[in-house]
Image (cartoon, rainbow, N blue to C red):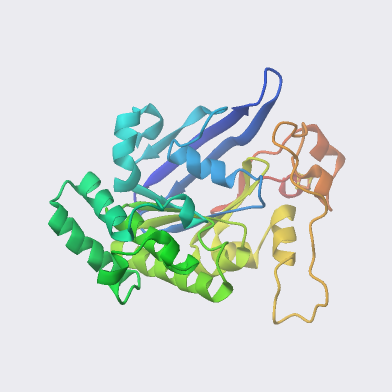
Length: 323
Ligand code: SF4
């Protein structure tokens, strides 16, 4: 029997109303599911809509952005029908989020300990003394050997990697079922990146937590994800398992991304690059949104945007090449 879904995003559209005539369709009809304990990667260049998708799930899209339609089912609850008060309970308790730059989420005037304790007390409603002990335990789990001392330190006293570990401790402090990690290692050195991603993987196994990993890095995807959704122009253009994506990529955008990955087994002097850039989300072309950059573009591609279709079992592609 297949596992029940933890999160089901259906027909999500998040638009930004820039002025009376200009509407940026940042997320434009996105569907996907995440199962408990699964790592799903949302991949694409900046401007593809992946971060706005994650902010939509948290209902943290700010004006002039607006979730225009769709549903976001978390278990049997539709997050889009929830009041701000109900949503505040979901955030942090059931769904937590970490960002690229932890300094934006950590408060510089409070110690790491105060920030973890406050989160635990707020969401778990337990006594401060118990929360303090749990905070020390969490800091040890995420790799702070001198956890008691770290409790008294301020964010600026920690390195970038250590700040990200502290953010992970805060995020997992309330045992979330889903952790959204938006480019969690982009601002870090390569060796620290691997440590943070290994830590996330370990937390996922330990707490059976699902992870929605937002990244532009296919190397990270290959190593850590179970499923991959490739986004382009506010839509998913390819959706499949990580093994299938790397062995049998179909969409020309995916193959372009893969060709731009360094491969130590190949003797190449120049990496491939996709020409041009993502079109602005307020002026997508009528037809396929990848048309201007696609090496296989045909006349039909210009007329109508292709649908996302399952061309092989569990392998969905939005491209006329496979019709
Ligand atoms: Fe390229 Fe056409 Fe496929 Fe779009 S639909 S990706 S333009 S081949």
